Image (tube, rainbow, N blue to C red; front, top):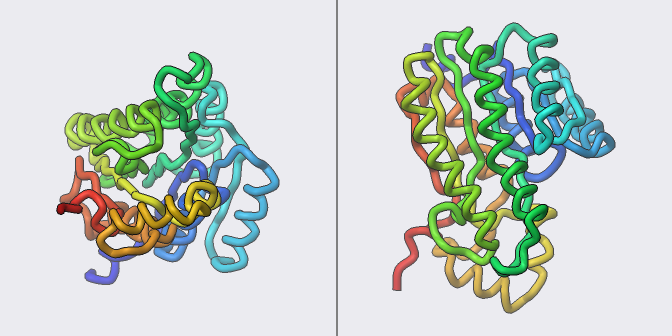
Length: 258
């Protein structure tokens, strides 16, 4: 019984933005815990490479892949149709896909800031709503939203990104309360700087890197696997009484004092 609380055997997990970085690390984590995977990404070549990698490591698991853009509502509906065709409901949804353009607030074009909202926030809201009937088929299911410390405090990622992540965190709290009676737990994680392709640009500046390290009590950049471990815990039966929470994966950044 104790061992089952720390496993996801027989469960199906849908992960967006799963072709690289944090999303791929989450896919590895959940597959390692016993979940079958439905992975989504925009770049079909990267997605197929990720699928092959996952099958090499976890040949006993089912890993299905679909190239889709979560910022497009037609694609979002296609994703859920695909999941319903391949699985008996859904146990886990990880809203990880995201994007950003960092500018001063007055420099964004309307198309730019609306695209960030579609990718980061509206996609998570719509996919959660579309997935609700599939998640509610089971006595206990889970949504995990990948937010950011930028949704909790000011960082230099731009106002639009921060707005989308702050809204995602509030969406997490609201859906957790609204859907608790349906057996759906809804939680979030909030990473600080994590070592991915997307962060390699800013962190390649030695002065900026030093600033980041100086504001991080653990004095290092996080790894995608560390975010994935937090996501994995929130999906487990062992976390069955945890909902509406946002776990910072930030090396202490949000607790920094003078």
